Length: 221
Length: 221
Image (cartoon, rainbow over all chains, first blue to last red; front, side):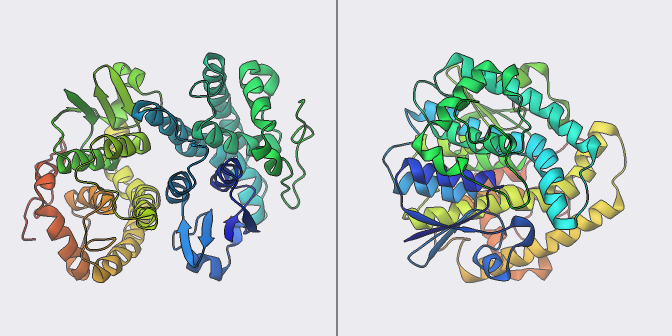
């Protein structure tokens, strides 16, 4: 049995869940609040980040290790597709979302709205939120540009780049921060992602005390 | 011909250089200041980070894509060694240095001493430096603990985890921030790394306007 310690607000956790659903890995989820991680879970992963993938007494933790382990170990379907150069482009886009989007959008918006509230009880700083919203516009334009050129972000086939992007976007969408009408190509891309069986579980996610935006679950949004 | 756009202060660039030297890839370096990146280089990589790996008209940018491309394309010697689980442990430690160490030590110390100085001309904030130095102690204890258990960080063999750790540590060592005498196991590990032919070029690095610490180049430090 495979156990994934995760949280709905963690894009790296969503990425692992979508990967496993694509690859039809059976797994059990254990939700753990990143702002209030239990001592037991901290012992499993000294870096104290999510997700943590546990099976047969083995522990794999952290985004890089979990992602590549899932891809190496569950080979059908491949999510790092194509030749060396194509895989490099997929990984470049993963880095784009997992580092650049994370630092420029997630930390500002999700950091203020969720982490700050649940860790200290404080209200969001409107200046920080505004900076995050401005950065989000730039990222949505880039996503829209990528989606205009191809069926999926790196070409005709669905890949890990789509998983990484959707993991991040879906959290901002849960919070109602994405103005899809301004980004028609990105919207079409996201509607394809939302229709995938691997995304069903993500659309059922709830965050305690934070209701999902009106269209979060709707396939026709 | 392979060209690597890099900077001596970029741990991700050092990682790629050590990997290429281990794999005996012939390459030419082009130094680019991360705080003053030219428009031409920005065009090559919209994420605006280093390193950028260029060959035969192809461009691979960002740490994740460059690292995995080098490992996939130049297969001797392997730096992601062993079975799936061992490679997961190597990647967990890469993440440790490339994310945790980077956020908790590099950003504070190198951010204040180098980036702040060269981008705005301001002096380092002593409080931020002190926080970085405190975090460095925790990381040096962890490195010391890892080095005590094994010949290299993930076992008997040299691996990508050693490359990632050494890439980061060597920058802090250049700035004279590491008190090796307090971490005997880490010191023994670093002396082995320093003696590797792949590290020769790293030890000759200079950063304009910032002299290397007294023992930076010494194999017997």
